[in-house]
Image (cartoon, rainbow, N blue to C red; front, side, top):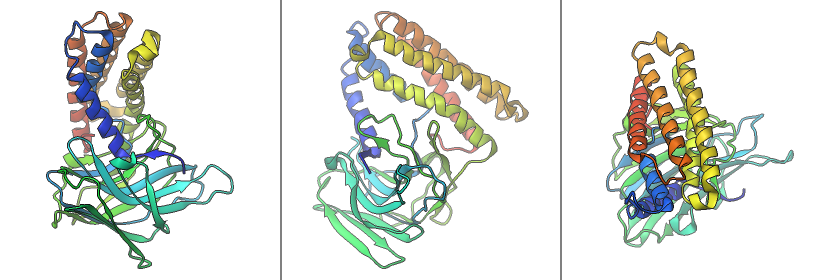
Length: 371
């Protein structure tokens, strides 16, 4: 299956950047330090998540989390790719543990779909650890319970009766403050900004949701939408009776997520290169910004050119967001043209924050999760 990196790495990397960036807030510092601080500030304000995740998250102290779901099938004619469906928990510092099912279809003509129960955690560098084979459309129940030694993880195939329970000693002395129920288009290796190809899956429904012994209360603001550049687009339905499905969005929802996906993608490439600007150099950063600027202009054009104006509550908000994103990319171009030696970072930050606010308004208009 190759190396797949799951959600925890992106969180841990972001926390590491915040730690470094906090030491680099002096605007008179080196270009390298200013780039780290700039990246930190932009990521904090960014309205377009590079989201390979669709599902829900619940904040607060977590002792146990559980759910059931039907293992999605890889549909006939699907391209090769990898996906996973899981529950997980993480700390405020990004330490992470998960359990669920991976879905894989190789690129060879003779490849056939492979479905494995798996688990992973930070100590394993987020690589999935296969537990046992699972069949598509089987009903699976997964659970995680923290104890004095770590976490007790359980996977049960309710269709066949097979079950696997085991202990992870990771995180026995830590507080976990985020629970998740997700389907994921994972990333490859340690380049956390590039999703692997995703197979075409049947619809997935999570049910029997449980958090700390009770049914969680999940609202739209707790959700995440998957919108991968040239990849899958999924949104969660409202949580009803401790159950939700992951479905393809309709009409303007799909149009918005499709349009914004390119801006997500090129923003992510820029953020990746800002980790080490001296390695990539000014020319590379300017190329990154140019691609982001082209995507932003295309976004603004498509927002203006499509049917948004026919929806009074949405059209003006979409227009504002397009302008804000274009302004942000223009400010970045001026900043990088100086080699980060000169430029008004505060204007960049302000435009990024303004674009973020506009993006949240548009998503609210469309009934989409904020990320």
